[in-house]
Image 1 (spheres, rainbow, N blue to C red):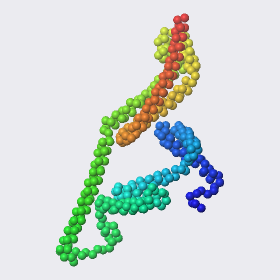
Image 2 (tube, helix red, strand yellow):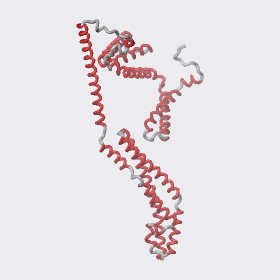
Image 3 (cartoon, rainbow, N blue to C red):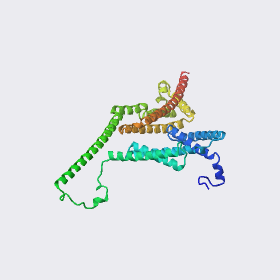
Image 4 (cartoon, helix red, strand yellow):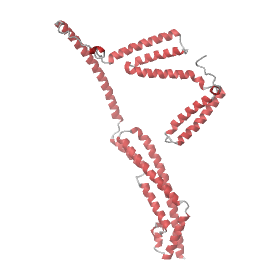
Length: 382
């Protein structure tokens, strides 16, 4: 029995040979891709999930329909998957070997191992087997030689006594039995070896310092001055209204609604001047008309309660966003600038919407007060 064939599993085997796996894989791929794109736009909320599911369902259905019309299937992508896996393995091997043996060793050894894997899997390569074997041997030998050269050039030599079990054994002192010429010769060789080691270590330190200097220069260029930080926070504050301003605006609206509900004709700007000219009976009649006009406004109390909750939540968001912007400016987290500016723009749109509702409600109350004032003025003239 071929180990790469599926056994007869009844209904599952029948479903496997249909386009159901294609639909499931396509739906998963398109949904995840669309959610990754729309998630940041809609703050990873339910709207992004619903749109991702709907678009993923539509695109996967269209793909499966197109496959059924042209006789394609996702099973035809097997060779592409193998090539992609081999490429990913080559990149991983190159990155792993490059840090220890250099770029040339990483490329050569990764190429040799990939050719070996392709030969073991029995994939047909567009070249004779002898050519592939020769390329494999040359790449492997060249990679090993490049690895050893790089390791010998850039890694400091370490003595055998430091990295072996021989440092536990006592080393006899033979300097007494040696002649002065022999001792001088050994001392000269030791000095030359130490000079060579110091030279290599100096080159390595110089190279590391050069890399560190470039990194510091890049950080100094990428670090904006304090003026830019102040401008960034100032821009956030300019986009948003002043803290507590919308609450004060709503407090004025609530004060006017309270006066109209209680019939305080003498305290309203629309009827204040008129009440000074009316007798007490006319003022009482105007107060009753004002309370009746307020009762005729359907849902005014519920609207004021909703505005209270919305304004409180809006003020809280302003405080949190301002604090987050100041913290990002202090900690130099300028990758958050674009996101914070977008959030500030959305809050500004929400502020404009709340302000429009407050102004409409205030206009409605003002019209009712003016209507009562005109009626009272007509009665006083009559």
